[in-house]
Length: 299
Image 1 (cartoon, rainbow, N blue to C red):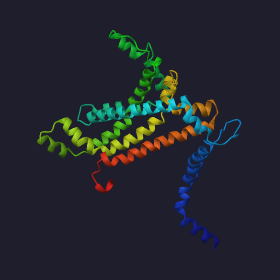
Image 2 (image 1 turned 120 degrees about the vertical axis):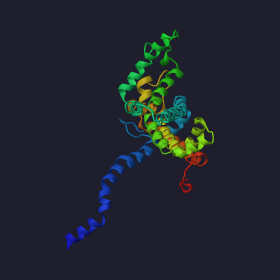
Image 3 (image 1 turned 45 degrees about the horizontal axis):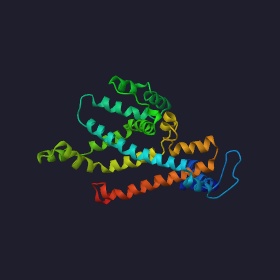
């Protein structure tokens, strides 16, 4: 009787037991760190001395410290420039590769490879070498008789370098755009051609409106990634010159693992989380005005 009761209990709750390993992992590695970081953000938690003080001192410093404010502004600038340029370039390449060209499969693969390799340390170091004073870019510039540019010495030059590294990794967004473009009916283009619409008119009046859900998806994902970017500025410019490319992610890393100020790092991470959440919320609200869904109930 007892074994029958156990068997019945297991059979009635089989689904729960299948989900249990994931649930345990989710609580241990997602919920607990999330909640503990919120608590630590209100403390001066140090990796070696622990918590000795609680309060709003971390948040007060975030809003009063000029270096921290500058890091947030640099992050804003980086994301606002990077995301539109990357999405525009990805859509442009996807549009070209959507045509029936000879060897198009090779080009699709070639354009996607940077997205696989771009996040690696080796590529970041190579990128730094390419933009060095005697690197490939300056060699090409010098071949045309122009003066070489010291990219890493100026704030705008260094920021341009890390933005270009990010834009170069447009392959993932391109593949998604390409899939969306293939879903647009050829009948619409044929009807537009009969009415005298050119390629550009068809692109802006047919293609873009029909793929706005995919544009919206790419916008959200790329925006979240841009605000959390770390490898590029950390390895290529090391946050320099004079903090010009120190994104908030680098500041969080420095506080957490170099200065051991986990409380301050947690507070900065939470401010970053709120910023990303705000941008995402604004995007979701604004989609009602510019995202087109074929099914009216899908709005």
